[in-house]
Amino acid sequence: MQKLPQTLIGSALLGACSLAQAGTVAEVFNGEMLGTNQRYFESIAGIPRESFGDEHKFRVQGCNITATITEDTVSALRLELTPQCQADLTQFVGDYAPAPGQPLTFGAFEQASGGGLSYHADCLSGCGNSYDPSVYGHWEGPRAVDFMEVLLEAVQVEDAAIEAADIWRNQMIKTMGEDWVMDGQFNCNRQFDPIARQALNTVQVTAVTVGQQLRVPGC
Image (cartoon, rainbow, N blue to C red):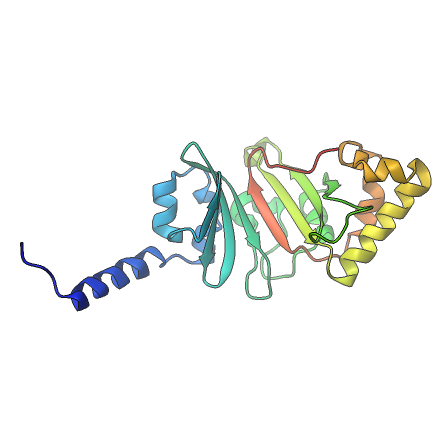
């Protein structure tokens, strides 16, 4: 069998990789990708950089996108937000999402969707230094958008997010006690959502996940 020159093999591999990585953020982080199979998704998004169970991490146009793929079907998509990596949520939930092109905040989503976010956190008291915890706003859409779910996330590293989490935490400690907060009871109790809603109103979202049966912190 005649062997192909290494230069031709290298060119072919490079061409194949370029073709696989040809997708844009708008094409990959898109409602039409939900429900597709893994092979089709990777034909647009490229090969994942990392995979942990059903979580597969992709780099698309310099943006980090994670696809949850269960039984060969894409069930959720997560986009880490930066000034260069912005989410167009109208591609998933239509008019229930803020208009694209503007910074995404918890308040902007509340206003566009008509409200209904429930608020959660990885940890609000006694968290330690092993990781930076996040606060979340979880929305379950109506039948009109096939009960699509949206999970807004803000890592507690910027001053605005830290201060908002402090306001939420301090009010709960004042009312329920620190042990209640340390045990994460607020994650399955909606009593203090109005406090979180007001505190997080102008906080910018650092990542957003859209899909079905999204995982949120429990108590």
